[in-house]
Length: 220
Image (cartoon, rainbow, N blue to C red; front, side, top):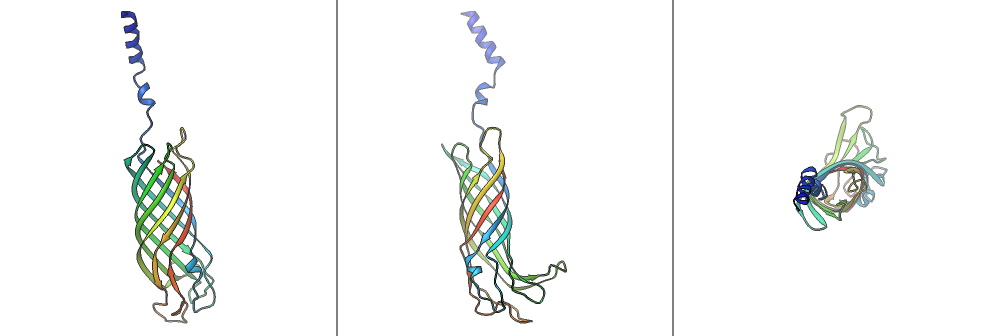
């Protein structure tokens, strides 16, 4: 019996971390950077005073960081911040260049991560949206004329799939997300008319939802 006890003690000394290594690693949170394409039905439906229209699709860059604040049996609740810049081109010719619709967003958000891998998320957030329509010169850097701008509070809902994360030895990789943003900027019109009006008085109302398909890199 003494020999068995001594052998057991030697095994425990030689392999002290075996039990700890089998425990799953705690999910602290995640961060991401992405590029994406947007579709904004109400922007596409505007009828400006000047000939032309906005493109059906826009483009943008964004990022986010979240930390886990509550762990459940098969899910985690994360809190963090999201932000992006977005732009949509047009063939509406102005005095400086073609009219460009731009957006900026920054806000707080929640992510609910599901499954053992915690790589499928439901997303929601609330934050500050800023939009404008401007002529931005592609020939002379820094030359632009803002025809209209507005800022509002708004919200989004969506879902994210972290394709590369959660597998053994993989803590980062490709992520895909789809977001629907809800914000109402009201009726758009030229704020100051120094030249021929581009937007006019009755171009229409610019509101949500608008949709963003995000493709990026995420890590935890």
